Image (cartoon, rainbow, N blue to C red; front, side):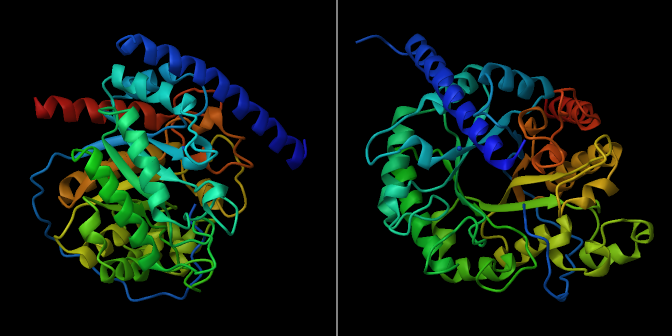
Length: 412
């Protein structure tokens, strides 16, 4: 099946799902109311690694733990039932602004509304990551970039929160804005432009519901630093600091999708691992840049931010292609990771973030893109899923069930 046909089928599926979820959302809403929406491969030369301090501060806030789902596909009752089955108290869903406000002031909430109502019924806290500006909001066209007027996003967020008051617990404002594919504008990848968008969003969110946690858009850890296709995340974060973004965020968004090293390995330690002699994917072992390393990235953010704000790791995970034997181009590192390693590293990643003390929230990427994606040969998201393409739990599923049950027991 060629790409054009697949795209047409996907568009048709989205239309049908949107119609189905609109009906579900309306029905659920009526029943509860009174009547009258991958990081590029690092290619920059190695930079000096920052070795983190062996000490960490104590975080007085509870550690929040969740998983990202593909809630725009399938019945949200089934999706959130699985979330509860694993034991996650938080769930993240990406919100496509471009889908929900196709014309200025005209809203179509169907597919999202059903998801939020079911999450409320299941007592699951919700993080929304808002992305993609409608074409009408951008003179340059396309949806993968910021609106010309930040107040357009602010108005959308106010409307979203008013309609779903009490069902939204955190909002992440944009996604990987240090990459051109997510921030397409003739002005380029300017941290100060993002901070202006964040300021407008933060002000609107807090005016409607001060209890909603505002998370800055997580950057992509990338070795690409050409200023056109990408900006190094450490350098971009420093630019955000200079533009005053900490005044407009409760938590600093971070991403790191692990490669073929575990969560305890610093970038400069990777070439010394036994796996360096056998790995098919050479990135972490031949070019020890911080972006390959989960630990180096998070501790590097902590060094830049200091104690000013906690980190919210809104996307992390490890991919495995053990049962598939194939990957999309650029994701061959998943062939080096067994399903057992995926399970172990995910649990260890959660536990390290919990004990380091400077991470407020950690969201696993992902629950269910395995059965909802386009297969392991074309869709890298499938490789990170803790459900396989048939919907069968992978080893990480049961490992997380046990880990989360242990956490709940320890907190009682």
